[in-house]
Length: 113
Length: 116
Image (cartoon, rainbow over the protein chains, first blue to last red):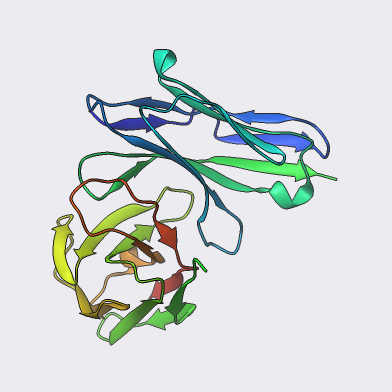
């Protein structure tokens, strides 16, 4: 089965706190891609990162960082020093043989001033 | 530029109406997608076009009819919809037209559809 689990439905933090969004995936494929998207209230899905199954290197982009661990089938996303503008729904997604993606249920992040 | 545009932003229609949603991209992408997203749910794939040909139809009811007139345009024709079809309809595109899911999908802002 191809599945993405985002166990955290909602997270609320105060500005400047660090926050980690969890993503656990299941797949039988050896070649697959993992993504994170941000969906602000406006509705558009904004691409954040793509990682292929052969590249376990962690990635940092400004205040964002991603930790990919095949041993635990996890692809977690950390926002450092969160800001109000980070408030959104964040989706983790798995893409495999076909041209579609399986999205997790999403985590709604609220950053309070 | 990773822009995908969608029109209209909002649409209200009755169950007997016929309407169309439009999606456009000028990034030279060869695959285009329609997704449906209900409130507080993740997007669900409806259709995939690859090199202007329909390659995936996720068992979508025939009241939704996709069309890809050219490589930059994707339409979704709506007819005899039900109130439960009310949702955010998202269009996306990705670069390659091959068989593997190797490409990043870039999404438009969506059309919020309400069926009365």
